Amino acid sequence: MSDNTYSSIVKDDNKNLTRQLKGLLEKYQKFDVQFGKSQHEDLLDIYGNGKIILSARYEILGVYDIGCNLFMWGKNLQIVDRQLIKISKKIKKNAVEIQKMILKKKYSDTAYLEKLLYYSRNNIFFISP
Image 1 (tube, rainbow, N blue to C red):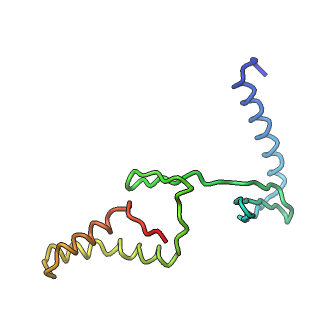
Image 2 (cartoon, rainbow, N blue to C red; image 1 turned 90 degrees about the vertical axis):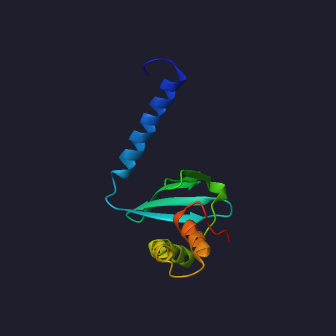
Image 3 (cartoon, rainbow, N blue to C red; image 1 turned 90 degrees about the horizontal axis):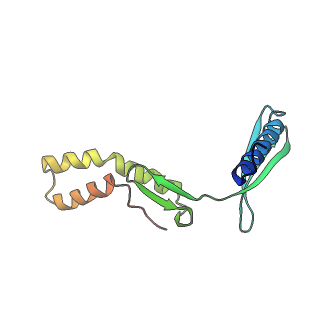
């Protein structure tokens, strides 16, 4: 230890733990990672050669959406059905087609089409189950 400050103690402890974990993980060539759930915790288990190497509890703190510059806290995240995600991706892909329909005035209800275009272009809208 170079000096007697709290930050140096934390750095030294971090280096020691990193060295110990690296030594443990270097013994194994291939890892299997499994996510699980107990009653109130999300769990992560890492296996090497069929033996458990590391077990940890984790929590997702949040997600940052670069497209609309929005951060959502982990507690606010909703589990969404994969089918719903596929459908929303199809809608977003159709934004170009909707724009063409508006420009060509293919339909008389352009206000409705403009609303669909707005929803399909902006990521801040989501469906809550």
